[in-house]
Length: 394
Ligand SMILES: *Cc1c(COP(=O)(O)O)cnc(C)c1O
Image 1 (cartoon, protein in one colour):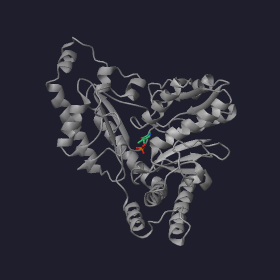
Image 2 (tube, rainbow, N blue to C red; image 1 turned 135 degrees about the horizontal axis):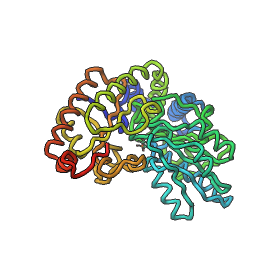
Image 3 (cartoon, helix red, strand yellow; image 1 turned 30 degrees about the horizontal axis):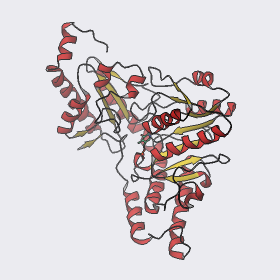
C-alpha cells in the first residue's frame, strides 16, 4: 500500500504510540485529583503543555488542550466574537477557502448578527495582504486565515497578515493544522494571537488538539463544566493522548530541517510527472506550498472514479478534503481559486510524507497516467472535448 493522504490523517509515530500506551497502563489517574497518583498525571500534562508551547514559541499558560483542530477553531472564533460583541465590533474577516470548522462557525455567527467578509483567494491559492488591509474596518474584531490550505497546500503570507492585524489592533487567528510539524511555525515571529493545532496531522493521535491564545486575550469556553484547563475548557484531560501529541509535535518540528528537502524533491517529481498528462493543471502556487502537497485537476474525468481505481492499485489518495468526500459538490477550495465545476470535479490530492519512497513516487505517476487515460477512454465529456463540441479549459 502506498499511503498518499497525509493531509487527511497521518500514521502515529512509534514514539507517540509507546508513550500513549505506557501512560494508559501506568499513569491513568485524573490530573485534577489531589493525591500523588493524580498529581503524576498532572505533571505529565504540564510537561506536554510545555513541549507544545516550546514547539511554537509560546508560553505554556497560553496553551489549551482541546479535542482537535475543529474544536480549537470554534473556540478561537467564539472567543474573538465575544470580545468584539462587548464593544459592538461585529465584523470578521476570513477567506473563501478555510476549513469548514472555520467557515461553518462563521456562518453561525452571521445568524447572530455578525458580518463576515471572505477575502478572495487568487488563482495561485494565496490571499493578498493589501486586500486584507483594505478590508479591515473600525468594527473588525477578528481576522482568521489558515496557515496552509488542507487541499491545495498553499502557504499564506502569515507573518505579513499578522503584522497588518497587529498594526490595526485586530485579533489574528490562524488554523495551522496543516502547517504544524511540516513547516516552521512561531507565534511570536508570525504575529499570531490565536492558533489551532491537531495532533493527528503530525503523527499524533486523533481526538486531541490545542488552541494557543496569546496572554491578555480573554478566552471564552465553549464546553461548560469543571475547572480543567484553568476554566477555559471543561472535561477531564486525555493525558495519554495529550502527552503523545506533545511528543509527536516535538519530534515532527525537530525533523523539519532534516526531512523537508527530500519531501520537496519527491513532491516536485510528482508535479513534473503528472504535468505530462495532457489537459491537466496543478492547483495552487508551486512554490509557496506545503512540502508534501500535490493537487491536480484533470479534464474530462471524475475524481471519485480516479480514487477508486487508484485504491485498486494500492494507492490511497483523495480528491479534496476528507470532510467533503462523500458529497457530490465540487471542492469549495477549487471553486475559490476559480476552477469551474467540471474541472473541479476531476481533482486529485496526493499528500506525501517522509515515508514516501522514490519508488512510490514513480508508481504513483505511472498509475495516475494509466487511470486518467482509461477513464477518458469512455468519458462522454472527454469525447465532446476531443471532438470540439466543448472547448478545453486546461
Ligand atoms: C484536519 C483539519 C482540521 C480539523 O482537525 P480535527 O482534529 O480533525 O478536528 C481543521 N483544519 C484543517 C486545516 C485541517 O486540515
